[in-house]
Amino acid sequence: MNSSPQHLAIVMDGNGRWSKHQAKPRHFGHKAGLDVLKKIIEAAAQRGVRYLTVFAFGIENWLRPSTEVSYLMELFLSALSRDVAKLHEHGIRLHFIGDKKGIHADLLQSMQKAEELTAANQGMHFIVAFNYSGRWDIQQACQALTQKVLSGELALSDVNEAQISAHLSTAQFPDPDLLIRTSGEQRISNFLLWQLSYSEFYFTPKYWPDFDEAELDCAFAFYQSRERRFGQISEQIESKHA
Ligand code: IPE
Ligand code: MG
Image (cartoon, rainbow, N blue to C red; front, side, top):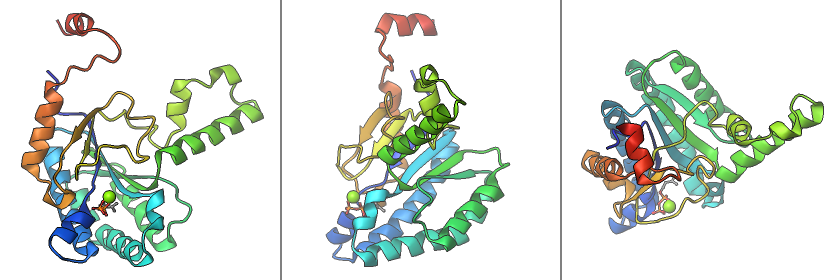
């Protein structure tokens, strides 16, 4: 049996539909979603998760109506100024992955400050994918690797899986063990394309603002019931654990 996932990744989805159900504007759902995230950070840390990665804002999300994009940017900025101190108190280490280009200078500065403040903490790593997409990540890794090959720092024959992983924005983290996506959608939507190769997937119809500790426990129970074979057969996995 698996224990709690060491690395949990979450696609927080359904804020807009949750709002619509209540006949409220979309930003209500985003605000409620942030409150849920704060509870889930704590719950995940309590359950022994070492890495929690959330998809907060995808590169494609810039295509949303500008009023919604502005609201989300304000929400991130105010969350950073209001909530980082508490994360720090709890020993959490904050990281941001994604394209830094295109992020407003104020927000970028708050992100960097939060990373610096919490860098020496020893608790759970909380990784926020912001202005992120899986294809962007692979693209920037390819560019960095190509640069090294062109300059002679790296031989072409050394461009292998380990080198690609080492040039992704997630280089310092293990691959996710479990991915949760809320709101009934069952797709990756350009999240951690490379890193999710062997992750277990848990889908729930609940909208993200309705997600709670009980649902997190259901996801963990599902994860614990899975046999992870990584391409091998059951008997090999059993003998390894015997
Ligand atoms: C997820 O909820 C929040 C973000 C992407 C920031 P959505 O806003 O995607 O909610 P739906 O999918 O429209 O219901
Ligand atoms: Mg959505």
